[in-house]
Structures are given as C-alpha cells and as structure tokens.
Amino acid sequence: GDGEIFENYYRKQRRKQARLVLQPQSSMHETVEGYRRYFSQIVGFFVVEDHILHVTQGLVTRTYTDELWNMALSKIIAVLRTHSSYCSDPDLVLELKNLIVVFADTLQGYGFPVNRLFDLLFEIRDQYNETLLKKWSGLFRDIFEADNYSPIPVANEEEYKIVISKFPFQDPELDKQSFPKKLPMSQSVPQIYIQVKEFIYASLKFSESLHRSSTEIDDMLRKSTNLLLTRTLSSCLQNLIKKPHIGLTELVQIIINTTHLEQACKYLEDFISNITNISQVTVHTARLYGLSTFKDARHAAEGEIYTKLNQKIDEFIQIADYDWTMSESDGRASGYLMDLINFLRSTFQVFTHLPGKVAQTACMSACQHLSTSLMQMLLDNELKQISMGAIQQFNLDVIQCELFASSEPVPGFQGDTLQLAFIDLRQLLDLFMVWDWSTYLADYGQATSKYLRVNPSTALTLLEK
Image (cartoon, rainbow, N blue to C red; front, side, top):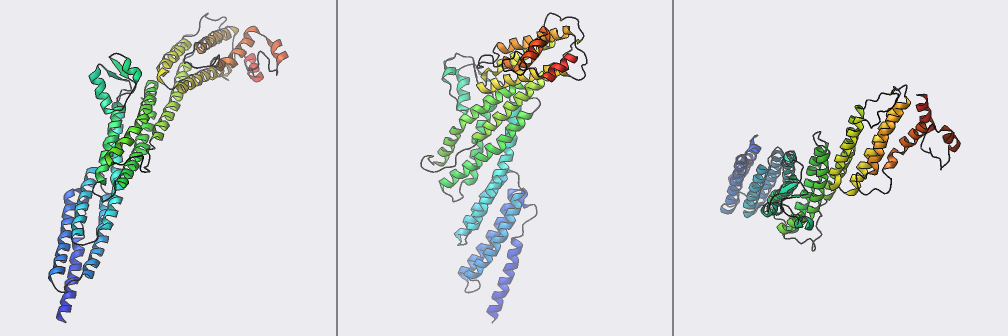
C-alpha cells in the first residue's frame, strides 16, 4: 500500500513540477538565451524521468511518461507558437529553429515521439519567410532609392566582367562595340538580382535539417521565391513608379530594367535546381511565376508615362497667352507651342530604347491630348469673341503640330496616321479661313465631304464667337 501511495505522490508532484518547467518567462522571445534556458529545463526534466523509468521498478511506467510527454508537448507547441509570432528578426527565428531541431533530436534519442515538433517547424517556417519578406522589402526600397536610372557605364573589359559576373547578361551587338560603352540596364538590376539570390540562400537555411526530402525543399524554395517576386518586389516596383520624383526618363529606364529582370528569371530557376540538386526535367517543380511581376510593373510604368506626358502638355497649354482680338497673326507660331514641340521631340528621342508599341502609343496619345486641349481652348465658354487674326495665329500653331506629326517623331507609324490626330482642328480651321460655308452645307452628311469631321454645333459655337 505504501508503495502505491508513494508512486501516486511522486507522479502528482512531478506533474506539478512539469507545469512549472513548461511555464515560460514572458520575455522569452526577445533573446535566443531565453529559449535555450526553456528547452534545457524541459530536457533535464524528461531525461530524469527516462532515467527513473530504466533504474527503478514500477515507480514510473512507459504509459505514464508518454502521457506526461504528450501533455508537455501540447503545452510546448502552444508556447512556441505564441512566442515565435512576436519575433520580427529572421536571424532570431532561425536560431530558434536550430534550437527546436536539437531539442527534438535529443528527446527522440530518449524514445519520445517528436513529429509534432517538426510539424510546428513548418508553421514557423512560413513565419520566418514573412520576416524575410519584410527585411527584403526594405533592401529593395534602398536599392531603388539609390539608383540613378541611367545605363551602367563600363570603361573597360574588367568593369564589364564585374557587372556580368553579378548578373546574367548577353548582347552580341554590345560585345562588338569598343570601350567605353553602356549596358542598357541601370545599377539596380544586378543589385536586385543578387538580393533575390541572397533571399534564396536565407530561405534555404531554414529548410536544412528539417528531415525533409530534396524535392520538398526545392518546392519550398520556389514557393517562397515566388512570394518574394510577386508580392514584395512587385509592391516595391509599383510604389517606385508612383513616386513624384520619377520622371519620364526614369520610367523609360524602369521599363528597360524590368525586361532584363524578367529575362533573368530562368537563371534563378537553374540556381535553385543547382542548390537542391533537383533536375527541373525529372520532377514536376513549381515554376517561378514571378514573370507576371515584371509585366505588371511595365504596364504600370507605361500608363504612368502616358499620364505624365499629358500633364506636361497641360503645363505648356496653361501658359498659352493668345490675344483673341488681334487684327492679324504674328506671322509665326506661338512661343509656348514651339517650346512644347521641342519638349515632345527630345522626350521621344529618349523613347528610342522602348519596345516599339509603347513609344508609338505614347506619341499618339500625346498628339491626341494636344489636339483635344487646343480644341477646348477654342470652344472655352469663358471666351466670348475671336477675331480672324486670332484664328490665323491659331492656325499657324496647328500647322506646327501637323509638321511635328509628319516628321515621324517615333518610327513605325503607317502613312499619315499621326497627323490624323489633328484632322478635326484642321477641317474646322479651313472652314473658317476659307469661309467655305456653301461647300460645308452642300456636302453635309456625305462621306466624301471635305469637312466631314466638323461637328455642326462646334462650327456654330465658333461662328458665334
């Protein structure tokens, strides 16, 4: 009887002690030392239990130690889940993972089942990745802020080799040119590429010693790299494009940069395969679909180019100062308009590096916006009276717009496509300059009409003025 009383007393006391041992300090998550003390106490406790199991007769049984361990394990997992969620430093999360692995391996050596701890490590791994993504978001931001958004100059072979050792770039045409020369992308491209590789290494550090197959690790790496590209890098690029100090030249460079980063994705695929020794051919691996990140960023940058061009045109239009009562024209185009056309001409020269469609769309959109703005100026309700001299002056300005459009500011337009942006203005002005109302009225509504694009209400509004 006494033996049974003592056994019960012993087990009850040990359960109490176990609860104390399993109670962590509130600041445990702040340092690796806090976690180490916690694990040491628990290991000490269960090593003692195991020792007693093996050297005494009946004081503790395997069933009892298993029950005690299961109770402890649930508590340990709850504690680690809570405390690890407070941690925002990837290095500390990594050290915690290493401690959990040693802790699990130690207890497994004494015969305690530890699978649930490795399952927990999978949860902590997702959180480790979150802390990495946050850290890399800052790194990407710094890189974008430090970039000057102009092509990388290389003075000699040595400098050229340094750049291409960091970033996979091949251009047979550029190879033929003599030094000094410029690479098409700007400084941020090789730096971003290096940081993506660093992220893959950091992500791999957690996957090591998790008792998982190379295939699973390969899959994890691809998934976390996809998150880095589609979420972190993507939002950094989208924020960059919207920044007020990013002008047209920078936007053009960003479009070129994203094209090169997109092409480099396949090298990142190989990089992961080399690390994990998993051939992309033999295994169905998750692809890097980060490509969409670069396409989306390009679309956003293109949209921003069209918007910024229109804003710039508006700025010039605002300083237009027509004397609507002048008896005759100055005999030459207005100064503001010549400045505007010079601005457009030099801007479109920067666009020569852009994919053809982007440059053409930007040019067409700018001409249409200019044409609409000039038409609105004529039809403005505030403007009550216009002299023929003012119409002639306005006509000289529109002629300059047409000359600009016909000079092929951007290659690739068919025939007079670009000039058609000004056709409504041209027909309206011709009608008034020649005072050709009889023709207008006679041909009205016919497809062959010389003044097909002149809306009667527009003509009437101008006539009243």
